[in-house]
Length: 430
Image 1 (cartoon, rainbow, N blue to C red):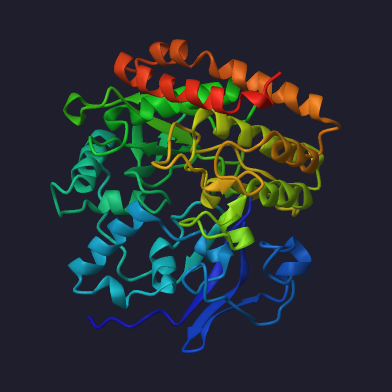
Image 2 (cartoon, rainbow, N blue to C red):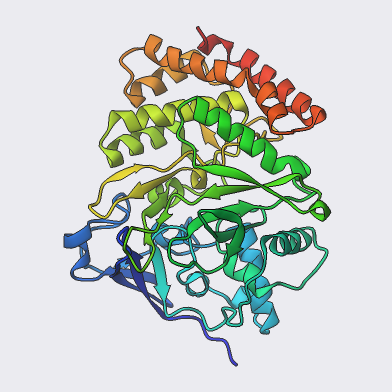
């Protein structure tokens, strides 16, 4: 079958009630990619991307950068490293070079399987159709082998479950509430949606990546930073991991009495602010101001400030623009998404992807005071009290890591860095 790029896609939104509504139309030509809201959508449900799209039915052209010629709203639905790897394998199996594939083709491939509330129709004809349900252990071992370059074969179930963002091997799976070990790649009524992160010896922390992220999520929860719900799932012995981390999807739920699952619209800071995530293009000042304006709440700005402090002191330096997101309800209200991808991830040059008033590391006291003021704190002592609370929580890292079964060598490695970060930023503490 000859390949030709997708010229046009309908964009639909799944509401939290499970109802599906038409948002508008995407079309591409030699002049670029264009979007047009459906005539009823803006008046009924508001703007899905208020900083870069107009809430009108006018034709709106996407910028050339930084989203591969797409609007940021739709670029959020594209897979990153892992999901793109799976897509490319499928395209190559059909004799299609990834260089022929446009971002619109990738959206069609995602179809209704992406994160957030948006879906794209018609779905790509290249999607696997013969999907057999596969147990989680098989999916995890297959993902690990593929990530490590030990196989070129791809299970159709892994492709169906692998449309999410991020570089690590993972799968979107559905569990029954009373039997989380039994998973599916397609939901049944009443299921919960989870994102399971698999491991690899080639990750920075090897097969302890999931354990360490679970520790950080526990610390973030203790600090009041509102991380997503998570659990550790037993991994097969042959995987090399003690456990895999599963995160409950916060964009997805099944309303009582509904025949279909509901979704919250999710929009990253990358797509919302046109801030490229592969380069250090975002500043916490921009994030805090956008949070306050979008959510219409000083509390949102203060929450983002406290999360920024956690990243600073906990050495989560992979804090790029795709790791910040917002959720929109059906009535158009926005709130910060849970604090996801919060884990130990030092940069080789000790630089954060998101800057602190222009500083990639060790922000001076004056810069943090300005950031606190922008976040809506009454005065510096109030903000400093929050900083000290987060610093105190992080002193419990080693004990919490032992509770989760992290090895002593890894604990020592991380604790050394945490001690360095605390000393480097001691001027911020009370």
